[in-house]
Length: 335
Ligand code: AMP
Ligand code: MG
Image 1 (spheres, rainbow, N blue to C red):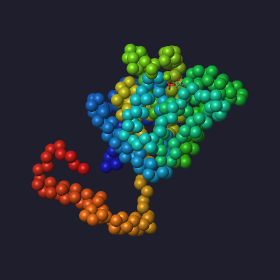
Image 2 (spheres, helix red, strand yellow):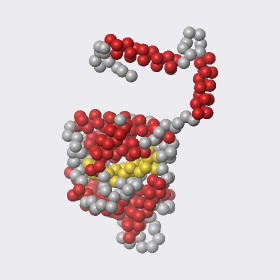
Image 3 (spheres, helix red, strand yellow):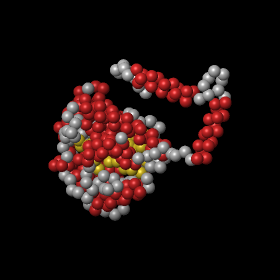
Image 4 (cartoon, rainbow, N blue to C red):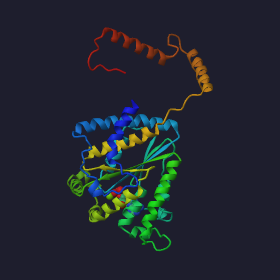
């Protein structure tokens, strides 16, 4: 069962992966409006629901195993759909096992440290999934497009040296490799939005009063740097898509497709980890058997010794009876 799902998900997400060591050009190689092989929205929404159920199942196992953690890095331009993606992808998972970390303009305290410090502080624990809403990749995106951000970081030596970006890519790759070697899977999603769709979404944020809060004049100022960002994205994808932490470029012009792709890439990572519920050792099983006996002895008069076991047996009896009649009503609930 899992193998079938894993195979289908792998072939679904493969075209989104930036092959490590390859050379991509965002504008030429990835279309923001790509159909990802799902033509109808209704089909996409149904598939997303399946994906969300799968995420729930695997997240429980990840939390129980307590051995590996998952870091999801979500990057996009303004109005790229980061918030909606997070809302949908997380909707089926237990809030106890998932956390979101948002990264804004760095604070004075954060600027007093090395640039990876603030990201390192919010990494997942073993058993946890953390979504970085914007991530350490801002350090080679907004910081690169607006060099005054780099000046604020007070690096020693000539900061404007172009070698700084190559060095950052190297440092980020090494950091992610270290995390990956130590049990933390890194899932990197770039939501690829077209300029026209960004314009449409900005206008919607202006036109709909309930959406006004999502819009700021700075967003339009940032839009003027569109081409610089596209170049920075291409550099980033080529330099930091690695064997241990590949990038996925998610077509983001259709929100439902973007959410489906994001859920699929995360599900793929979890299936690959294949977390297991801890095995109960023989001595622990003996302890459980003894505790079961003790609890059964406490059953009040007339109550089954083990109500759970009794309800299971009851359900099985009913099921056999119905099966025997051979005319189960359509749409009847089975559990
Ligand atoms: P938003 O996520 O749209 O609410 O805004 C967060 C803002 O913080 C964006 O404009 C980012 O570009 C900016 N930001 C995030 N990380 C950094 C960083 N390391 N340096 C400078 N600006 C950043
Ligand atoms: Mg913004």
